[in-house]
Image (cartoon, rainbow, N blue to C red; front, side):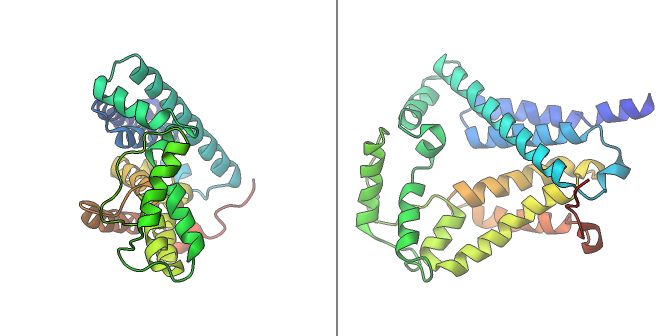
Length: 258
């Protein structure tokens, strides 16, 4: 009875994150809302695991299960968001933004991160050395508008500085610094992934912060430009990931099939 009460008590952070997710989506902060929702789902799944089992090595079956549940939760959230915005519950601004980004051939995700269509081509042109710091090429800037219009998206306006579009820590570094920039951000990306897979954080008092920071870091490395507040927050998130990483003996043989 007491253990069940404690398990339900561990659901409180998940509930708070769900409220934060709803508030962020309502205020049209879609990515933060989605990440808070996924963090809540992760914490809820781990709430009924005992602290002793939480320190066990993860199995391949658990990895697949977590990945499938995460994908399912993401798809549900996207459907709920699309239904809400089309009904007008999130306001006219959100509806206009949705119409510009979701009416194209490849849906909402690529519509909101269409720079990937151009940065991938820039990488293929110079994958090893990159295009240099603050890489500029007006052809790529114009190509972004052309590809968006061809795919049915609102093209927007051309970047006057002709910077090669990337909208991703990883792709931006690969475009500018070549394979060495790619390797660095792949290492950064591995930190939150390993932390979420190799150790269930239910036993940690700071689990909500760590899980949310891990998911934010994964999203930002893949889909956000490295600018402004990111220059301060990313080092903080990396330190958090490294601080909560399990010791090496615990990680050894983490993915044994059971």
